[in-house]
Length: 68
Image (cartoon, rainbow, N blue to C red; front, top):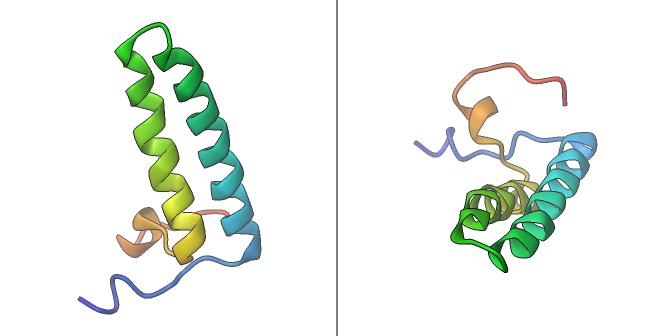
């Protein structure tokens, strides 16, 4: 199980997930002002930021190859 949670992102992958997470989080916060559907963007945005900070990608941990 420890191999599953082993860091598997390089610098480019961390930057990509950080930017995507920040954009989703900002958009979700804006949309939450109007409806609760903004949580659909906030939760994945927070998870993408978590992936960037921990240098770990759940998709890569499952064995799927990604570009970064």
